Structure formats: structure tokens, C-alpha cells
Image (cartoon, rainbow, N blue to C red; front, side, top):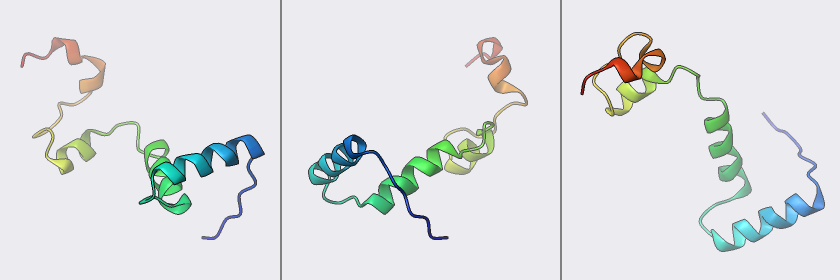
Length: 70
């Protein structure tokens, strides 16, 4: 997919300053990272399991996390 973005000058200046101080990043890599965060499913328990952060998240864990004993 190809998209053209038109951003305000002030935001463009901030983007240029950010990229100057982070030479290993590009506009594309930055937008990709931001989209991954913004578009992450609300229930990320499966992602945590896949990443190996938790063995298995209990059903509805986010609704009653304070009830779990570590």
C-alpha cells in the first residue's frame, strides 16, 4: 500500500529533528512502529504468550488482575 502524508510544518520540523537525532530510523520505520502500537489488539494476552512474557494469561485477566496471587 502506498500512502502520501501531508503533515503540518511544525510536526514536519519535529519529525526532521527526531530523525536527525536517531540516524538509524527512517520515516517509514517510525510510522511502522507507531502503527503497530496503535493497531495492536486490545486483548494482547495472546501476544504476551507468544512473546514468552507469560505462560498463559487467565481468561479476562485484565478485568480482575488484582485478584490473582503471584
